[in-house]
Amino acid sequence: MRHCSVQVRGLLTRDELERYNALMEVGGYLEQQDRYDLAYTVQKEVDLLIQPAIERLKEKGRMRDRMTAQYLASLDDEDKE
Image (cartoon, rainbow, N blue to C red; front, side):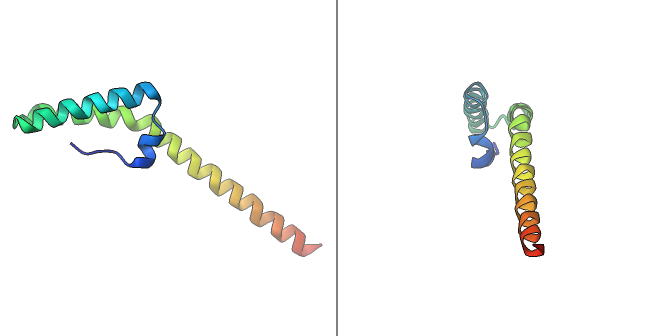
């Protein structure tokens, strides 16, 4: 089973995180039993579950980029005065 990044995990809601942990536990058990066919299905569910958190992380990056651009624009405005 592939874990998601710490940044993505940090943006999961409590319900999403509980479900994520449960799915990872089930997937790990299935891998121990050499049931990779079923573990694959569980991994797909994990991938779907973390999509909203990935989008939240992307939005945080976009917001940071906008704030940086505003800051740099304000520096340019100060230089012109």
